[in-house]
Image (cartoon, rainbow, N blue to C red; front, side, top):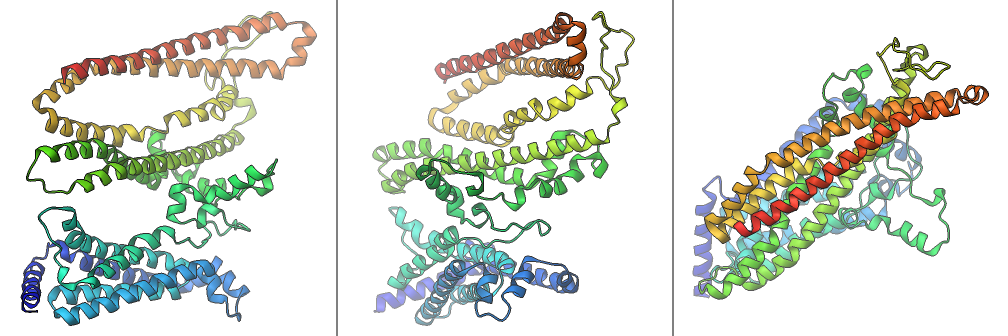
Length: 551
């Protein structure tokens, strides 16, 4: 008992000394709680100022309240359903149990500065958890996010103080004097801060109030774990497996935020000049219109770059344990690291593919709508072909060139040009994945091989102008190919519009020659681009075989 008392007093003095430092990691949960409280307070003040205006506008919650007003299950419907309310109630019970254990631990070991600060943080989390159960679906979304952040920071503090030392040979848990109560608190924090937020379904909140869906899409109500593992599509997959035919009515409805009426409303101010868009590079306009999607893709790519280094780092560290007698980290940590790394790689890569494909589909829908809207603004007599065909099949050299191939450009914009978006959707990998992965790989190779790793890097830098030159040629060839495609489609469109006249006067051979000529030019450019692409791939393989022996 005397030894335990001395240890608890020693830990209390140690905690008080650490808490005197404002930049100590133990204060992270307190900072998170203070920031959360300030943000929620500011949000409440701003919403109270606009309460009268917002009360006049129709909302999904108001409609739900009117329908279920007077019934006992009104709150259940406002919260998003009984299943979601059960999840929130279980989470609230876990946070309240955690608060009880924290008060008990502080009462046993003494009300030190850290114990008081941690008790206040857990008390704030308990208020958030209770508020999360009683609030409506719209308010609970932000409250649940704040609750997750606060509980996760508390869990991170305990993981650093008490779980991380168990992974080493020399360190010991700083709060081991609490005994079994410590691990009960860690288990509760793991549940309320990690597990439960991953598996709690989301309540359906209409994004576009003007076009409400009769039934929400499973993607909008799926939990985070369901989104990561695509479990929300399991019902339709099992339906297709059991049924010989799945009709379109049996497919899940489109998400509110994927409807073209909603996406165009947010993207037109950046892309449509008639909606106030600035005249700038279309890529920059798309990035501004989908800035949040690009931010999420950047996070996924950064995670992917770091997780790809988990396997080589784990393998190298595990092999060094036998040669290093003064090892710090236990071997099972690196074995677990080898399993967690590939899993994180797959999840981050699939999440990036999901985000990039969804954005590409949205951009295709927006561009199609934009082209058709602009086509309706064009006067019919404004279309002038680059060349005019006469009866003899000769070309009129005096035709106007302004606005040439208008019909061909419109047709290509909504067909082949849109398909090229799928090819260029992976350009964020050049901005985020490639630089970070190259930097991490060079640091790892320098640690393993020493200065010789820079020889391979020098070879790559010296030979870099070669693929850059090939890429520039591919770009110029692609531009010429698209112009040839516009001319061919224009010719075919003119031919189809005058098909009866061509058959009547027997101009099939001459028209066929005029259509075949731009098609041959297009095929030559396609062949040239394919050859350049093959050369670019060959250069990459040559680089690989040149740099590996030098390292």
